[in-house]
Length: 305
Image (cartoon, rainbow, N blue to C red):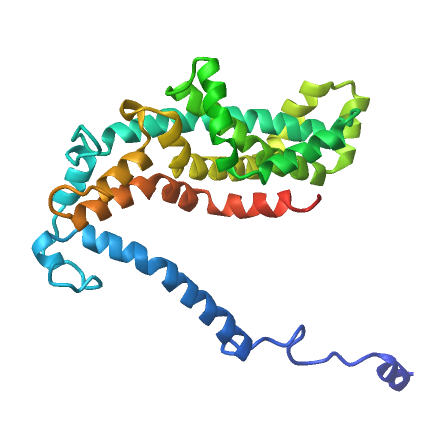
């Protein structure tokens, strides 16, 4: 009896279980990480050159080695770029343009994101007659070159009394950000479980109740994506800034162009590099702070078309 029980009882297997571990230095990993390192170096070198050049004096820059670290670090180029460089008829540096850009970015980003989120929510969850046609027009608008609309918008802003003012430029950025943001929000809201929307409807929640109590708390990643796209696009914009504003309200990018492309006096490369880094600092900081949420939002917003 004991022999039969011992024969019927399976013997426990010894040794490791689970999938076979992959080699750390396999051919696939070497190719993958090697490619990523090369790409990272390719995009990091220009930033490195700008920073080290901005910390050198002109005498050291004239030696010609742009990749060498500064022998004697100086922050005078940064001070001059911020508060003393000539950006036109005035020599107040980039500080005035920085605050102009802040005044442009904040209302433009807030207005475009709020309107586009409501548009995307309505197109995803509240089907109405002509919704598909409206969505097609919005998608078409996302791919119209900005240069095509320059002159018509000049006439429009002139007729409504907003040409050459900050509110006029804010209106332009809000309108041009609407199509792509509406597409992102619509796709994101379509990817959320439809059962939540139906359950809220059964409980008696209306349009705004579902939007504020259900959709918004679940939409942080896509709001971060929209914020990054809008802040980067508006902050780095040069074309609209130079066309629709005047010298006293030029954004930072227009002032940077005037500093770098100035034809008078000595070409101060350290000041130019410091001004370039200062101008691009805001989008860089936002990307570093919210990078993970940006990837999550992009992935979620691309689930459904």
